[in-house]
Each structure stands twice: as structure tokens, then as C-alpha cells.
Length: 609
Ligand code: ZN
Image (cartoon, rainbow, N blue to C red):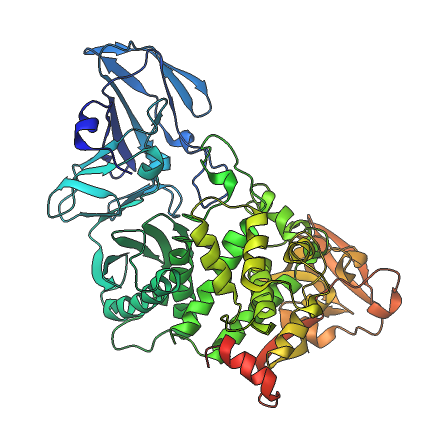
């Protein structure tokens, strides 16, 4: 809730002015004025940005702070890696200035060069202790000619370019509104009566903005309908900030905006064939970040209420907030007709195969993987596939398995068919941060008991097994009951051996070795170059297809750290003591035209056929 104007006049106001100090040195200049500071005012900068679970130490890009009060310099002492104390008094306004080096092309920090600027508040705005809940104002100032401003922040007094004054009700809101600066493309539409803006930076001149606007609008309309029916969503306007680059992909969710990055070639272009798979992936990203507007920005884990910007905020629920959002992002492409059932099942197959290719799924639950996101998922290395499981992909499969389990139940009396949609809406209606018990209770309220086939008596027990357990989900049985054919095909030789390889300039290199695999048993390590198998030179992945004989042991020549080494590639037949952990199978999911009526009826309702 916003304070009344009369209250505002009596409250301390926190004012920031941000301007460009030097485009070529990638420097923003920030001037912070605290109207009523505390004596020995404490200041800090976040070490992470909500939505991206890694301590990024944004303070490393700040210049030394300088401070003045009553036109005299006052000392500033750094008291932590991202914390300062200003030797000021409480009887006069305090001004603090500093520069921020901004050359991070991701959506998580800040960027500035001669073509564009971008910043998140977490990278540029110091938090003034004791005043986090006061109104914060920002003046965006001194832009190069031809540049504009785009942000979801509330404009107070701005020029036609968007330069000028913006307001946020508190520090949390201030840093939850990324800002794009530059000569970008801007399109607009209304979804269920709510104004939406789509900003695209870096697109080629023949970029088909109208196509992207029309497709994005369909996603937004469908999601607003999903959560609110005919009522208004909980935001007055929404802004998509999309930056097109040579190669890149990602997004970060905010309360009424999102910052996205995509490859320039993946955008639709006027008069050219649309890059279907890549454009579909971009639509999935747009759908994903928009769904987060509800699922994580408003329905949030108890551990995020409030955020602690000074350290890791652990939650065991990212399988829900990221995984369920991943399930629904593609579901909305299907529900809006942007993709058909065949394309949807292809996306589900990809998710199933990604999880199957992760031996870590048998040692780490998605709840544990959520908790450890900061140190495992966000710090990938050659051992990641053995050391965790993705709460995005396995979380999406948990969502699908729950949705299918709910849809198998017979509704009681005249009640509507239980679905995961109903569960999500029940959680929305709680109107407060949630924990795992809330999810179990919402499932129970939606559907009573789980289906008998699940083998447990309560949804809480089912979550214990699927979310805290490490056994594979019963996806094949569930999908078969929904008339979806599950076909397992043999994987590539590298997959069957349990390793990931890459090829560069005619050299085949091992990227990762799966725990318990034939590759590990053979003695291969990440970084090894595969030189020859059975006396034959290896240069391309196809060479493995030609020379690998899985029925017998074969000599393998490798290079590790300049040493040529002779190994014996062990066949599956030669070692039965250890379980085979390679990925022998790739799953292909298709509509089963021969499925019986019950399965076809269930499938038709699920896949909106
Ligand atoms: Zn997400």
C-alpha cells in the first residue's frame, strides 16, 4: 500500500540520480541523497539478485564511495565486502557518490557501452539502512541523443524519451525494476485491458515486431485468464525488456517486467521464413518469465519473505517455483495454439531425456538440489551431472506427473475435474508466502486422496517420494494411461558409454564422465582427448559409431596433459559388477492413435485437442 501524500511529506526520502559518467569506460555515476540520515549511516549493496541464485558480489564493480554533508567531505569506512559506514551526523542531508563499472551482458547486473545501457537496482543502488521501507526516488539523467528509457518503475515526471524521475514504494520495489537505455524498438499491446510494452534492443532492421507482439499477447491473455478469469491482474502495466545479441539466452523475472536475452537470429524477420524451433524456444522463455509474475514474485516461498540481500537465501522449493513454471511455460504455448500436441510432446521428450542423462538424480532429490542451487546448479562444472539434478527439468516432470495423477481421478459429484491448474489457483488464493505443506494441502483440497496407482495414501507422502526421493518418476505408466506412446531408442555411442564429448578442430574431447559408467570404468576423465580406438584415428563423434564394438574390450589411445596414454575401453559384457549408468536410451513421445477411448479422452483434455 502507498502512503498518503501528507504522510510522504513527513518521511525521509531516499533519492538517487543515475547518469552516464563515461560510455567507453562503461561507467555509470550514482549520486545518493539521504534527506534524514542516521548518525554513522550504514549503507550496503546486495550480493545477489532475486531469481538468480548465486552470490555475485556486485560491490566489486563500485568505485570508492565519497560522501559530503553541509558541503564538507565526511569519511566513509568500508565495514564488509558490500557494506559501508559513513561518519555523518543526523542533522543534515547526506550525499554519497560513486561510479559503477557496467559491462555484464547478462540480465543479472549492469551494462553500458556506446550502443545501449541496462541496469538492475541490485547492481547500482546502495541500500540505506533504516530506510528500506521508505519511498525511493530515481532520476535518470544525461542520456546520449536518441536514447530512450524503458522500465516498469512508476514514472513521476519524465520527458518524451523517458528521462526524468521515477518512484518506488520501498527498496525491494526499487531493485525489482530493471531499466533499459538506448535507441531500442518499442511495441505495445493490451492484454485483458492491461497495457504491455515490448522493448527490443539490438534487433536487425527487418525484425518482425508485429509478429512477436501478436504472439506475446496471446501468451499474456491466456495467463491472465488462467489466474484471474475476467478480473484484472495484480499489476497496472507490464514491460518486456528483450536484448538481442549474437548468441545468448536467458531471462529474469520481476514483479511487472522481465529482462530477456536472445540470439538475434532467433527473432522473426519480415519476409523470411521463421526459425521455428529457436523462435518457439524464445516464446517459451517469454511464457516462463511472465508466469513467474505470479509464481515466485507473488506466490513465494516463506524463505523469500523478506529477501536477505546480504547472503544466500536457501529454499527447498525451487522444484516448485522453477519446475512448475517450466511445466506451464510450454503448456501455455500449447493452450494458445502457438505449438501443436506433436511439438509439445517433443518438448516433453527433451525434458525427460535431460533428466535421464543426469546420474545425480539417483543421489540428490529435487528438494536438496533446490537448497544447494547456489553452490551446485549455479556453479556448473564437469561433475555437475553427478552432483545434482536440475530442479527446472525434474521439477517440470514432477508438475506433469502430479497433473496427470490429478486428471486420472474421477471428480466427486458435480465438482470440476481435479487438475494442477486448480492447485495453482488455490495457492494463489492463500495470498501469502507458502511452504511445502501448503502445496500438499492444496493438492488434497483439489482432489482428496491421490489415485490408488500412486501407492500412497496422501499427497504429502507422494511429495515425499517424488520431491524428497531419488527414484525415477512413474512417467511411462502415466503417459501411457494418457494415450502417449513411449518409445525408447538407443542413444549415441558417447551416451551409451556415459560421457559427454565435444569436437573442435578435429579433436574429440571428453567434457564430462557419468558416475558408474563404462567411460569411468575405463579410466577416462574430463579434459581427455580421444585419439584412437582399436587402432583407428578418432576425429569426429561419428568415428566412434564406426569403430566402437560394445561386445569386446578395445584399446583406446588418449592424450591427457600432453601425455599419451593407452587405456582399455571396457565393454558392457566385461564388467557386470557395477550398474551401467550410461544413457543407453533416448525417449521419444508421440500421440498413440491406437490408444483406447479412456486414454484418448484423458489425452484430449490434457493436450487441449
Ligand atoms: Zn524461472
